[in-house]
Length: 398
Image (cartoon, rainbow, N blue to C red):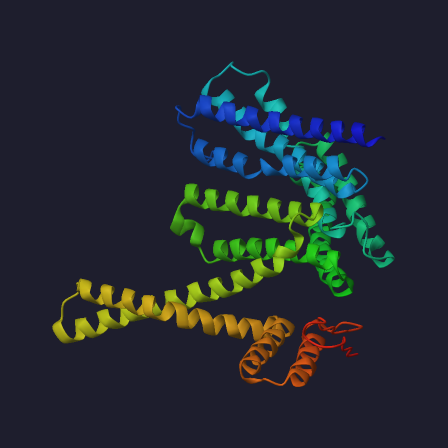
């Protein structure tokens, strides 16, 4: 297949997925004025779910059209198409429920569309196993890939003949449950393969894996927040919007990693995330602790439950005063702990700048400059040449 044909095919699949998602949004908009029975997902939450996966086919189209020889982009296209089909199933059935007779065979078509979910589940392990090169990191991972493929084939065959194979009973249900269990187990093992790949990688591939790691951390934070009940605190609509934002961030991170656009900015991004994430948590603890302590003291002294506004103003001023000193300390700690070479180089340059202000001997400065460059840049070969109007001849230092 030529690159032109591959690009055309990739964007055709992307357009089909987007058309399916647009159909979902259209049905949601048309039915949003009519209430749904209890147990159905609200129209607004369905719309947010659709928006959350809009980036999937676009990401797949970008990667597959630019790097058609890399199967990773085609994986994202298939994954996005599967989720798009599954996403259309509920709006189709829901609209047929509130507007009887408006759609053809809602139950049958909805069941067919739901087959997209197993398709996406089958492809999920390979999104980890083949990142970012489109190949396994070594032959040792072939059994894992074969296990995922065989379990996926079993699951797809079962879902073709049975709408709900896990509820069919007997050997059918046991096979379906076993296939799903194998796939989820392989997903976990595949995620661990990225750790092994990172330890062996260097250069560009290591930077690509850093982008994926950043996306994985965001997803992990989302799951932890859901476990502690933050979704109930924020409400379903706001939580779904947060979920859509996380999904979009993941798509952007994967796209940057594969397409290598501003690839090395990940180090700066991770640094800023660590610094300002830690700073936000610490300031929040200080603020909440200060307000709570002031309220306790005020209640003990006056017996009143209402806290004066002065306590809140004072806590805010304390936060403002702590911001810059605390940020500098956190930045220094993170640089020392995670960016040691950069930290040592900065300290060396700072010491050289201080010496440069006081040193007047040109020979000493030459030797000092060569030492600083050798220590910070660590070149294989180093030469220093002085201009003729500064010295009678060039001086060479190796």
